[in-house]
Image (tube, rainbow, N blue to C red; front, side, top):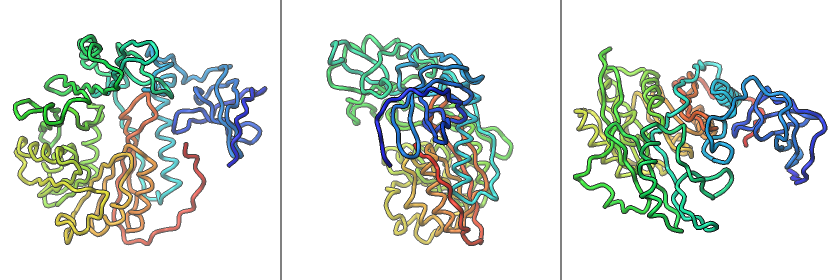
Length: 431
């Protein structure tokens, strides 16, 4: 592909008709696709070409001639320079529409979707939803001023943040309460300060803290609660987690996501279920309430230890957690070898589970529910599961990260005996 760096202001206005995965407007000009920064579907704009290639051009928006009905005023004072959010200038409904549209389009083009039922996006609050935030702390080399905040757009420089509207009120208050003390500890060495809102308070972790010293056996771990239902009776699970460990940032959406995943597994009391990349048991324990046995596999020993503790805390004795590097060959391991599972749930990170999916068919599960924060790797892995006789039967987007270009998605795959069809693939722009 030929790349040319020749800025050129277009004489014609551009009509924005779509949105890319990274939040740029899509237009056509003289038969060529143009991706326009800060433009949204429905806008008519004046633009300047910044990069040109054989197949598409990239451009900056110079002037909005006619604004889209979905264009809104950003609600954050730092939005123009902060790298945290990318879509505050687009209404929340339109954000969800285009995220869902892009995911479903890619999914349908790439895999056999004839049996797939698409579900409306799972949505929630768009403001004050984050219960976890990682801020940078450093003395700026240029002006020698200490800063606590987030990185600027396309830069390693920090913006000093006093309040972030997408953080929960409790997190914002904790940042304000601790700002002065933290700024006093700043140095030229970059540090990360993590604030987590748990159901039992705010927990702060410094990246320079030693792992052994940050949490002693006498220190209470943060926890959150999940509302579930067993035999139509409401119950509550308590899940502890390391204060420097992973937790879904959107508490409201996490509860909705867990309940939907459990529903899509179609569980029965006699089932044996495998939960891969299980963390501290976010999905495992709700599943355990409804089945005979659950095996949870996680790569980090600290999380496995907390997960086993969570099973005891919730008086669930039908759960077993083990440590394994799920990017290695799992076939020789006892929990995989010569085992059959009725259901499988997996929730890997952005890198997906490509090699693991090549062998999941050996476990003979009738249903697999796959949760992912990266649609492209999910789709890639579905193709491997198709080769083992699985078909996509349900799909939905979960609005876990409002006002950003990030998404959480979930699919259900069902085992069939049909041969793998040949799917005609159409080109997809992946930016």
